[in-house]
Length: 285
Image (cartoon, rainbow, N blue to C red):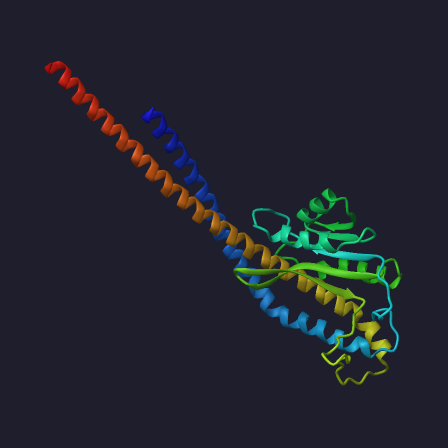
């Protein structure tokens, strides 16, 4: 029995060692990708954040615009742009965001799924998938995301949808990623604490309407590409963290198995000594 138990423990230790090698390798790969993609977010995050804030300040200066949300406006149909990963093994990166969307999505809403995981999840939850994009990766450029931008602007301008939301995972640091949903269009005026609309002093030439309508593709394109890059950085950070935790758990499991193995071996040695002593005493008697 002891020999069988020791053999089982040895097999378990062997399996844990193999798993540990895999998770450690994946952790190293994710770390390298995180460093590479991380440089991109450092360059573009200030840009698309400033674009978002600027347009949220400028559009409320218009007297009337389809891009400005009024107090009594009802949003019946929203198009969600959801950024997930194509691969798994990244902890709660996808599920944390998707659960947040499921809590808010309405029956008439439709989804643009970015990534295999988004397509599979929302299909399983019987949501309407308008389009899916499964080829984005860490090498994707601003031009690659323009197809999404043009589709969004076209559908919104043609009144096929009432609103656009972007759902992605915001990167804070290597251990903190926050599921985030932003209202892309229409834009709600920013209200201050004293219930006044905060506006920047801006002069438009030739007029606000022309400037805003011309610049809307810039606004939508910057937010979509920024969310794409930030989502990719968060994915690699989540995968690195998940693989690090898996490697640590494997080491803990291996240590516990070694303790069990040593105890079983010690028990087997003790049993053999007892049998030798018992046999010697039997012969002496």
